Image 1 (cartoon, one colour):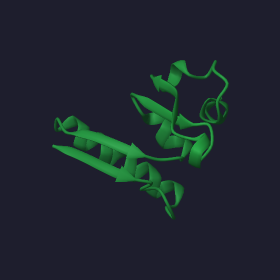
Image 2: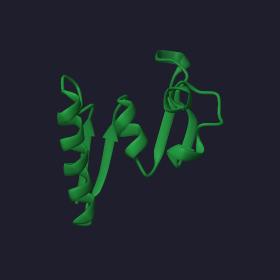
Image 3: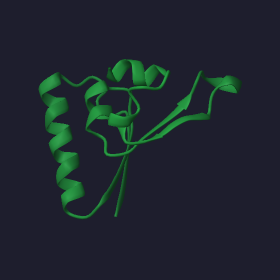
Image 4: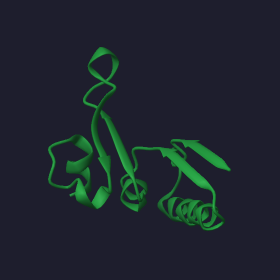
Amino acid sequence: MLFVFDEPTTGLHMDDVQKLLKSLDALIALGHTVVVVEHHRDVLAAADWLIELGPDGGPDGGHLLYAGDPREMKGIDSPTAIALR
């Protein structure tokens, strides 16, 4: 089954973000696919695959800036890579 979450950390306390990450991991452990649209650094760092679109919104957005393992993106020059450093 595919689960899609759109910014699920909005308004959550840090302890709740950690609970959310454990819940997402539990879904994955059961064989489900989980897609999360998110800006929260801890969620990005926990991902096994990251897609960054940008660099801006509107007509200047939607371009693929990065796709891959988040641990491998730290060397590129993008807003998300800077946040993960």
